[in-house]
Amino acid sequence: MIVFLQSVLSGLLVGGVYALIGIGLTLIFGVMRVTNFAHGELLMLGMYLAWLAFTGLHVDPFLSIVLVAPAMFLWGAFLQKSFVNRVLGALPQNQILLTIGLGLIMSNTVMLIFTSDYRILTTTYSSSSYKLAGLSISQPLLYAFLITVAITGALYWFLLKTDTGQAIRATAQDRDAAQLMGINVRRMSVLAFGIGSALAGTAGALISPTYYIFPQVGSTFTLKAFVIVVLGGMGSVVGATLGGIIIGVAESLSAVYIASGLKELVTFVLFLALLLFKPAGLLGKTRA
View 1 (cartoon, rainbow, N blue to C red):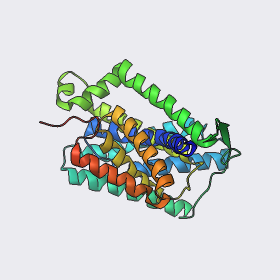
View 2 (cartoon, rainbow, N blue to C red; view 1 turned 60 degrees about the vertical axis):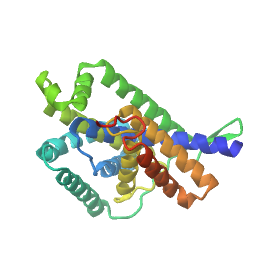
View 3 (cartoon, helix red, strand yellow; view 1 turned 180 degrees about the vertical axis):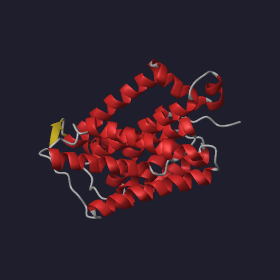
């Protein structure tokens, strides 16, 4: 029983960060109907920024999010205005090719600057853990989870209680109707892409003490974020949160009870099963 509870707890902690990654992607898709295949590379940039802040300025990776999030917001807003905005009305395959291309440019630029060597961000608490009722709680994962909960709560408040947040939600629900109501949908698109990029970069900074940092690390998280978003329902922030938790717990349980090398396979089997019986995702709306 202890092993089961330990696995579920570890999965919840990791799933919280997965949820943050998924929320950024689903926010971008909900507002602009663009699937951002460069999302993992934005996360990778967040990891490198946290590593630079740690090695150059001696800033703790969890505190570095106050630097990483604004920087990634501005970078995301620049990408949206300069590139993504030009393909909003284009065919989906054009949007996919553009975002894949942007991802390749980011990862290869980082590789030119930092080489493809693996970087490790080691803090005094990287291998530390708390003991509670026979369970071991990783300190870096616990800190990352608590920060993720705080950021997710702030994001929900922003989307539900502020005029700008409600304008973003209105744009996500019906872009044309929102424009007729006087909402500047182009500005909302810039904000959504900036916020999504900031969330991806923040997630990168949060996982930097527990993952290797290298230029190609983003591709793994792009695929994982896509699975999370589709699992929860494309465009649903609550669904992305739920999807991240489910994927985190599923990976943790399958690593313990099946094999650590097969945890990704179990995740994708669950994903395919859901697509078979509920293609719109857990909280997605089926189109008539």
